[in-house]
Image (tube, rainbow, N blue to C red; front, side, top):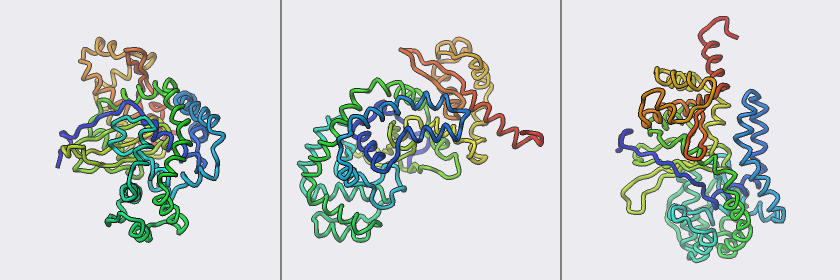
Length: 383
């Protein structure tokens, strides 16, 4: 078993356009939009409206562009491929016919194939191979439900007979296994313009990717585990056997977390890949008013260091770039990065990359929230 110290955390600095296209269509089929989530956040947390709106705006704009570019999609076929099957709220990705046929495998994702490559690989699979792919998807999205071997249609029908879904949904799965070549071709035609637009408008979300990398690039496994443990219930469990954690940014996954554990190609590592919304930290900060004492303690703990208090004081009236922090504190770049990671994971500080420089600034709304929350807990007269 790998100790906390030995676990490695790496940050993937780019999204996967194919996964984003699948997530976008899944959201569209179930009636979810990023713009609506933004409106709900602003209504529920008006004190954070300006910050949240500015952060989410690039994703909202991309979503609008995708909506405009896909008006010709047949609504009936969209629902056939992307309506969720089974316990739809169990995982952010959900399970659908489209995900089972086209969701990139780990090897495909790492190879950065063009979208046509994914489609060609899927069409080239034998029926037994496509059934194995569907079985893996069923197991991942249903907490490893049913692992019995099957590789033909007859045994597959028996395999899914007990799957927690309606008979109509089970028939859709069998139909997809029989007609997978035609369906993958149809999905390619439907999704290709979406993938192309996501790639073409990289400029919209590039600053968010830089922010994501800066926020998590120096985080340790212990800090990550502690961060995901805060709240009324633990949103994700990192396997004790994992040797490496990969953090992957996503644009269209409901600001939730999704994880899958796999072995590396040479079986030398056991890796957990955590797909998380690119603004997960911001939505969590907005909702922090509802978390229990453990969450407040996590924020207070980040302040329990004289250097971090000094840094927050320096950020009180203006933003500061990292070189300035090293000069004023006398600390190394590595030490500053460690302290800033602690403050950012607590939601007290944010950063923005401009050219080659990273600028830090305080989140005054979060700091005021923490002051008010601690006061209300410890002082009788607190409002």
